[in-house]
Image (cartoon, rainbow, N blue to C red):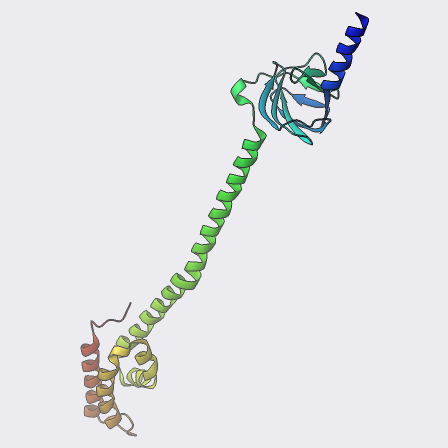
Length: 227
């Protein structure tokens, strides 16, 4: 009989394993995730497994474990299965009211954290793209539009001989900006060349230049100035 008991005890010691959990800290609340280093475990990776009514294993592998204490344990050991049992270093567990559905899965939390980082990165890229598009496309276009509007204003605001002479001197600025006015500008220029360089102009000659410039403006008015 003693031999049989000895053999049973010996067999149990061979096939059972004491899986040691070295908890990361000495205190925790019920429902709170706590990590641990794992020693003497070579079984399959466990995920989301409840051990009795005391412990919830989020994940357990040969090196690390993430655990949740569901209530304050009376001892520091629990059977994991028919042959293995868990043992951990002393820990002070403070019980708080935690619904079962509130147990936090660390992997889900990490995934959600990564998703938020991904959303943040996508938002940053979208914002950066919008800023780049504004600076490279919209802003220069707006500046160009304002510059065109100012050039057009000066073109149509010229009303005396001095202002008209200034427009003629800046001819290429106006033609480069509004290429469609070149033919009409050249027609006005014929009259300007005829009288504009005389040392002294008569009133009639001045009127001819003003009239020619007015005709020039009438001909281009309503054109595609892009402003």
